[in-house]
Image 1 (cartoon, rainbow, N blue to C red):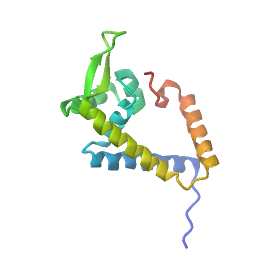
Image 2 (image 1 turned 60 degrees about the horizontal axis):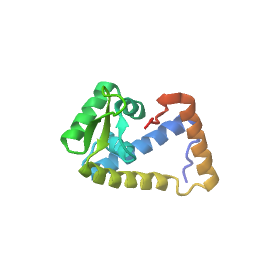
Image 3 (image 1 turned 135 degrees about the horizontal axis):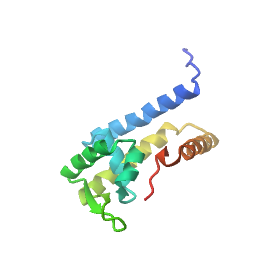
Length: 148
């Protein structure tokens, strides 16, 4: 039996990030989406999000996000709407077809991510959630959350 090497903190985080990214790759392929489109649609499941918040959540430059949203809009997955509070800003929301695909993709991503930790004791899962929340909070607005 070959022993797995003990992972350091950095290696563990990098490998976990790769696992999560692979889930988006696989689910995206199943729904004819790029991994980035799958991430975008999953973020929009809860409702419209402004472009600034999307750049933070997806860690993309504005021009890259614009291209991603343009491609999703051409496919009929998302629509741009003017922000009622700020007419200069727009919010991105799912179209009818986009909502159908997004819900399916989101459910599948969630199922697969839960499966990654299925064998962990509950206290380890809670500790992981707490550690990640602390890291994101320490990062501030750049931590990946959105201000819906």
